[in-house]
Image 1 (tube, rainbow, N blue to C red):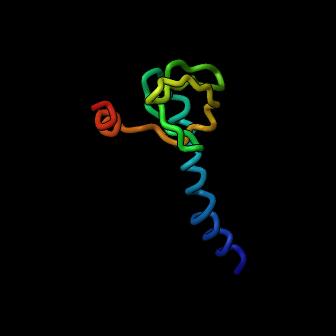
Image 2: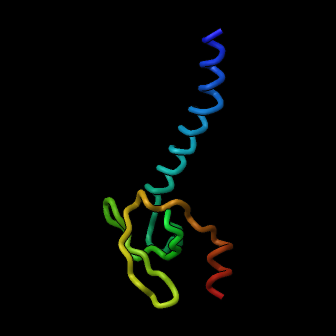
Length: 87
């Protein structure tokens, strides 16, 4: 009885979390200058430069320059969204 519960728990909880973590880590490793990102705090900006553990963002409308850790980046904006905000 206990073994099937453990298998179900693994398949429904642990495995999807591991996949999500792997996709996020791959996204972080592939960041480059010019990418538009969103941070955990909801700040959206364009990457100016990439360091080992941090990135510099340019944030509109005043072109503020912020340094945030890579771990604070939640998502990478798609090209379609970038084109909409540039117009």
